[in-house]
Length: 254
Ligand SMILES: Nc1ncnc2c1ncn2[C@@H]1O[C@H](COP(=O)(O)OP(=O)(O)O)[C@@H](O)[C@H]1O
Ligand SMILES: N[C@@H](CCC(=O)OP(=O)(O)O)C(=O)O
Image (cartoon, rainbow, N blue to C red; front, side):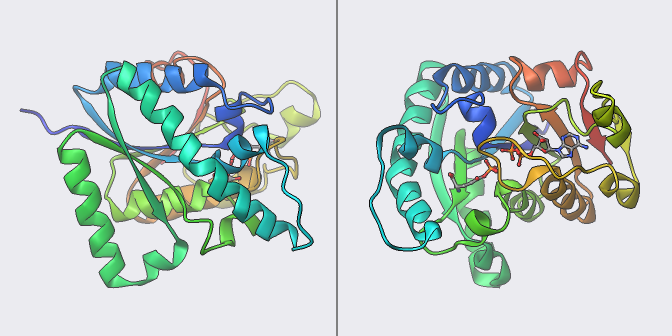
């Protein structure tokens, strides 16, 4: 049997909410549908944000603590719901899924790295799709500084995936000039990171935290491990299957 292509799919809060205040079951169905179609040739590991967004749907916490502690508490409330929704929907598509919570510091310890790799390999080899998020109770890096893009890149490198797909709310990276002209044009293929960083504008989406810069930094981490990154528009249905067929504009970072 031919070896499957290992793909790490990163899904941001904006994709999961379809830019609303609620998690979109329809978007998770779209993801499950695509994975089900690709599963004979590809194996998937997912890094999904969305815990805070789910909790915000139905909880408002009272606290005098700093905002970051409130976000950590919201993540703790939202994470089990997020995984429940994934599991319910994935099951309908015949897909098995599990949860892994990781911290950046785990990537600095050899023993933790070995344990992560071994656990995820057992899961994937048994047709489970690990759904990873940051362990927000113990680490605040992502809530404060960035987002799951870097976690996705570190995981992609550790697990030696063949492709990192970052699903966001634009058709990849646009040229700065085209954003200014209000006619966004996708940069389709990139090899030079310095040129790319100069295209970043300061905006980010409503639930997003890192903006395009953190995606480019993630791609840089992936590239060091010889992994190609695709930045695709997760708001569109069939965003992965269409990218594979080159039917939609997106950015490939080689
Ligand atoms: N050159 C660029 N091309 C496209 N988007 C850009 C660019 N520069 C900055 N951005 C911003 O980056 C955002 C995507 O990042 P982010 O809001 O963190 O999303 P996510 O939740 O998917 O991680 C876009 O919505 C856009 O506002
Ligand atoms: N880990 C947290 C926050 C992640 C976050 O904001 O990330 P992203 O949507 O990728 O910019 C969560 O699941 O809500």
